[in-house]
Amino acid sequence: MRNRFSKKIHEIFEKQNNLMFLTGDLGYNALENIQETFPNRFLNAGVAEQNMVGVAAGLAYEGKSVFIYSIAPFVVFRCLEQIKLDICIHNHPVFIVGNGGGYGYGIMGATHHAIEDIACLSPLPNIICWVPSFIEDVDYCIEQIIERKGPAYLRLGLGISYPNKIEIGRINQIVKATEELKITIISQGPIVKSILSAMEGLSGIDLFTILTVPLTSINENLLTSIKASRKVLIIEEHVERGGLAEHLIIQLVKMNLGAIQYETLSAKGYPSKTYGNQEFHLQESGLDSNNIKQVVTKLLNQ
Amino acid sequence: MIQLLLRKNLLNLYNNANCGHIACSLSCIDILYVLFENKLDTERIILSKGHAAGALYVILNYFGEISDDELSTFYQNGTKLSAHPSANSFKNIPFALGSLGHGFPIACGMALAKKNDQSSEFVYVVMSDGETNEGTTWEAAHFAVANELSNLIVCIDRNRLQGFGKLTDILGDTADKNKWESIGFEVFEIDGHDIISLSECLANCKSLTTNRPKLIIANTVKGKGVDFMENKMEWHYLPMTGDQYKNAIMSIEKNYHA
Image (cartoon, rainbow over all chains, first blue to last red; front, side, top):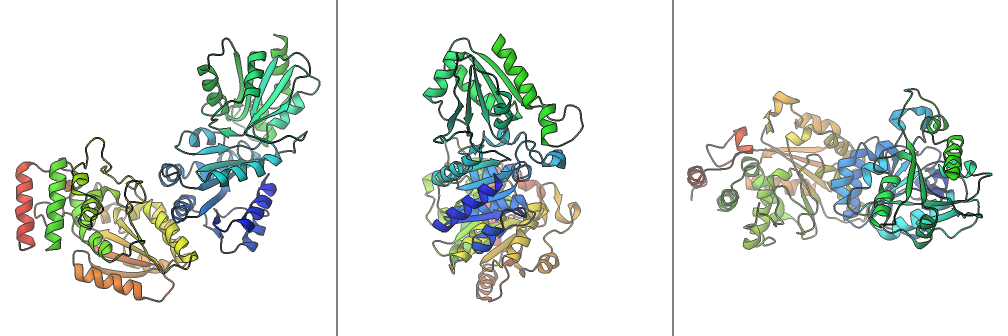
């Protein structure tokens, strides 16, 4: 997704002169092209993330739209107060880009993981968190973020391409049940590839992805699926508190849809207190395709 | 005399509101006056030491941006004038400030934008000396030098007292001239209550042709003008009793020769 991001930014920077890009001294092998083509609009702000957020706010006040880039935990947790006070309450067009959301940085360890980022950012005023699931979502997210001209967070990971061509929106149906619908699975982020793999050989499942938290509305397509299946499984590479599941379930409960069974699969932190690659951590949290398959099969047979 | 008038208005404001942050407002009110008197309409002044909001409100009232009626709502429910500045109501209060260490980075961003746009305007930021404890102050300081923000004028209100003790007793003198010079700032050290010196210093800052950002270390007195408040940390927090208000007015009238 990072290369796609870099390519898209380059393309948009050629058309829009008021865009700026700041990095917290990261982006090796990804951002060089932007740096070389737009030397006056690309700036390495150094290993000083809090200052970078403040600088971006000042630039935004003067009419610029500003991307700020780092590894997800550094540009979220370290500068949360700056994000809230300098950007969000003023509704400034500063677009925070966190690379390697979730367990994306794997064996780099807990310092480099961001499994509570959506929970920290999504309650702040005016901000929308964007979590692309497939590579092509990145283009859509960037276009929407720039057009909205308000605070945004873009969480990048290692994604795959869409299995089928669709018109991308905030809510996307990836798989439509061919037989009698029994489960609606809703997910967010590159974890969707594990879900697709888990679904091989299973039927009776609708799969949706949602690109944003908070979600302003639930579209008719998704609602119809939930009303028909009455069984919702939400899967995310984020802790259960404050992520997609919590946001979505609150909205659905408020809609008085009657009895609906909700299940969630989410990041559990470091249950064995040992460390490994991204797949290892996903497995520890039950987010690997084998476990997803077991959970889904159990729900199908209930 | 302007210094007497502004101080009278400030004491009146805090007396009506029955609240603290008087001494730290008295220490920077002369600096703010000189900056606002000299600024161009579209130039920005960032009061990063947001706890001195009272001084900012009195100055903006003096220059006509905040009406007397509006000013009288200070500290009341439903006011736009909270104890620390809230943004989005007045042109010259561009950001909500009060958590220390935020204004300097923001001012760097503004200065960078103006530089990129080849504007000849300056950006001003007023910090407390205690605020130089903050890590973001040093991040921003190096950023300003590295990016040659010569259009940035930082002013430290150096009253030598911070929230719970003397500056030099806590983390050392983080507002020390040598430290800032060694980073690469053009540093001026002056009397922060002398309006003529402040004005001349500001003119000097603007006339320099180097690529360095500027720092004015304004040596000030916390509670300046009110004898019983001067250099007393407690007057960062205390509201005045009725008698203290009367004494404070008498004190400034004596000190500023009414």
